[in-house]
Length: 456
View 1 (cartoon, helix red, strand yellow):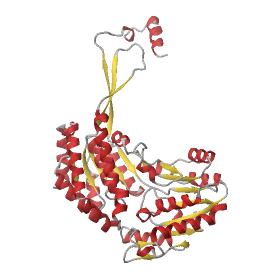
View 2 (tube, rainbow, N blue to C red; view 1 turned 90 degrees about the vertical axis):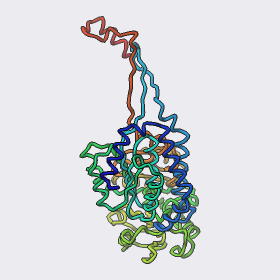
View 3 (cartoon, one colour; view 1 turned 135 degrees about the horizontal axis):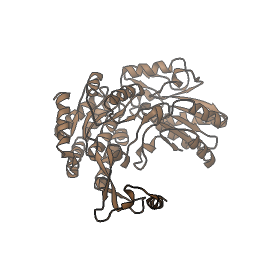
């Protein structure tokens, strides 16, 4: 089926009101879940080939999170799809008001390669739960996961509700030539700008989940051992190919040397003395990105690591000191296992540095000081983040996940996903048994007096 036919089928399905039926949505989601559970080994095999992810990491960072999302949807979809009654702020109007969440219509999800299963299925199942039809375009870089998704769409067999389209950037451009009712894009800022421009041609609303250079701050009162472990986890999960991974770390000068020692120890505990031989360390997605990381590392001073294997596309967890603000590694999102570490003395200098650069997707602060926590969290603008931890904020469904400024537009997760893929339609049901005569012309002084009373 070509793109034109897929688009037409989805339009016809939505226009026929098929997905307005909540039970139909549940049926489609149940079929997807059943397929995923029956083919979990195939997902693992795909993620192993695409990124070198072992089973435990694949479940922790991708598969398990989709199961959790689908369980959450099952528990809440009936509640979310019911009209929400709201009160009136005007005293004498006799009506009932409600908000109905209706689906936008035909949704295009454009997914990235770094978490090719999670970041494809998370927006897709949420869009279906909200009553939309969904066309998914996975990244061509994650070849095996894309094959799995294509097979899944065929087996689920809901061609007017859930479709997967494979292919490269030419296919993406062709998809963007159509008028979608909503576009959800996860990826780089450069491609995000292209998607945004294409969407603007049709005034199509978008969610753009982008990235940026997420800073981490380690104060001199931080629990250093725990900070080092949690930063190592957040940075080197998926070999650093995570949009919310710590991109660089500011460490107070009084604990700088101790922190580096502890971080180095944790890296060795995670990946052994020879990380390039460790099955725990994922590989870089392809040669293009491997070469990009080699270029970023060029000329930097390595405290730890720095070795890479061009054959296996593995790059050691690498700690860097002495990086300058004008260096490429401090200008571009790293998206790999390279971590610049910089000493600081005055926290306000760190805040100024962060605020002088594009707003990041995440920020992480390690300190026991409530005063410092409040100061940094209020002074810096960022998508979301953690105090005394890294990246796990994106697992909490009661928190919206998304960027701000250059790091993205919109948010999702939990009810926020349902809200993102729905139009909040307001409905006022006015009484026909009583009428308010003072709103009609002529509006004399007596009516003005009555009107004024209603709005106080």
